[in-house]
Length: 213
Image (tube, one colour):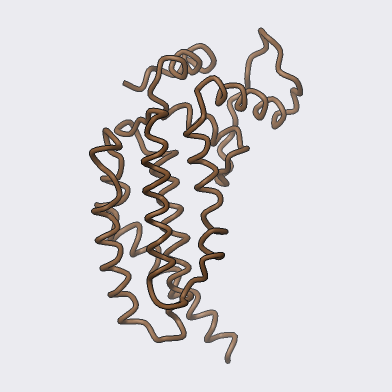
């Protein structure tokens, strides 16, 4: 009975978390964050709404469910943040110089979960869950030349080609659904969202991808 109860709490927590992030907070999150330009669409309005929704969620859940629900909301929020950075559509492009603002915004998002409810989530847990997002943000701080070099090496290794050579066609890496800073598909997505001439030229020559803007 205890295991069944725990499983039910986990299920309710997961459903509540993804509803809160991908439905209740969607207008301020995926539909608005970093749309068109980073400086004019930063994270502060989203954090205000997120805190309100977390307060409401805490009020309707039993005490035992609150830590589990908060962790699931954190995971969902970090997933949504990755979607903004890597699958944000045509209305989002990033300059390398945006990196510091994005890094600062993500720190603010992490702090929401460190401070929401006394002891609900340990800071170490937040930092561990944040590692993938922080790895992607670090990629966004690299030069386009470095991203191209990293992508070329990773794509060749992943496909079994081995050492890249001039004249050899680079394979289009598959979407694995598990983004991380060493995954060639993830690096390619950072390049696709990069707003500069070097990235655009590489994408056009290598994959015949049109200029984003």
